[in-house]
Image (cartoon, rainbow, N blue to C red):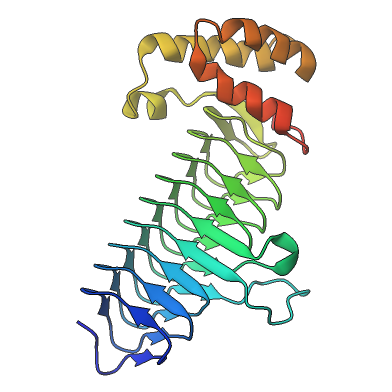
Length: 256
């Protein structure tokens, strides 16, 4: 299961059933969970903890030093959950001390070729990042979000659950849950209806989220006024609650 042409540091901890391809380098303080497959010519540096049943394809760089000029070699970490797919030439950096020292990805995420997850990012579960998409440092990406090809998210932005960012879109503000973002001018363009249906949301819930979208984006209200109307709507539609929470927590403002 482990190629004789792989280079494994003595301090690395590989669980039962781990497969390591030829030319792959596993550095110090790396822990890899049961059933994970690592292809040829991958570099994994530590301190990094990788969970069970992941697939990491050739030429990926996982857990190396953050691309931050203030980084001085401190022992920061990367944590990767279970059942993730990391495709060719993807890069996931460890954290920085100033950012909390940790980059974390949850479970069942799919990172396509040439994707980038910067230092101190917090990525949830069931996230899809399409080819060449990138997260700058300190980005929060919630469950079931989708980042289109060539899209980029500015540092410290928060992308909500079930949000959809279209191809070649540059995001510099927070993206609310359930919302689609697209265009050169980076504007909101509706609720992610197709994605919500695929994830089992009822027609009633989707209609309610459409009403919430109109309150936020079409009525010309301030954030405080919109939140007040959404709080009334949430009585019959609990799905609105994440939108209210995101509006209340946002420090960068939201993409409109």
